[in-house]
Image (cartoon, rainbow over all chains, first blue to last red; front, top):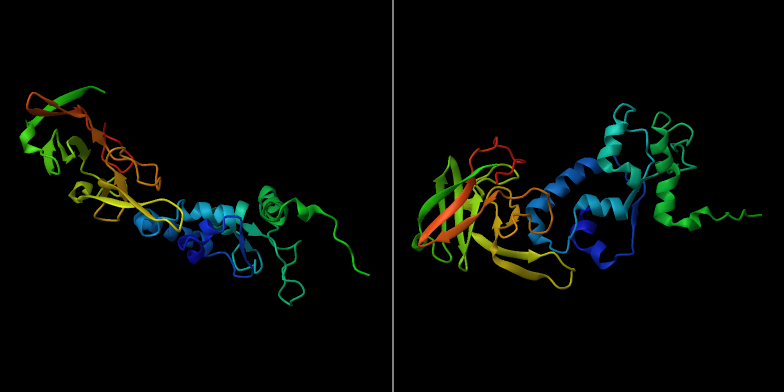
Length: 139
Length: 133
């Protein structure tokens, strides 16, 4: 994530989004604190990083939710806020692995608006309206 | 806010390229002469209260595309000695919009051969988010 932001990759390839699948995500918020602080102090070393790391991440970098059960329910709102989950988190199940996340179970205590972002709207915004097209069923 | 003019000496004391940190009106203030233009800046970084005027004016790498890094703002950037935050001495703002805070600056002028700066009569409480002007 740091390399994408600070190397200029996101500036050189402005149409590309990056999705980190199954990397967990509880670490994203604290990482952003460090990145933003480092950028404010050392921006002149990476002048092609023309906006804050948080802005780059909100616009162009996504994380999938599985494994979703590492963060306790009481901590979830803080973690979501710090990582801007209303933009950056996409539901994933990891089906059919034995430890896959059931969509009806994970995040069940999460605010309905945030659930909508994670389970639906963030994906549409990331992949575009084509995601709404009917999926042909094989066989 | 009512302001008070303070006489800080003869213009000859502030030649082009010079920097002086002086105590005026219960404040530490840096006086910079950039190519003949005078700037008066509160010696306090809005980020974490460092004595920002101890830094020498420099230039910096400007925000731009990856392939064409451009160096600019020569002699107009105060890069704070503590955390490296860069301030544009002309605008008082961060060089590349890295933060909304800004330096506290005071109007400064030459009358006859004397240098006068205009400082608010009352000093606001000290804090990174307070602007004294």
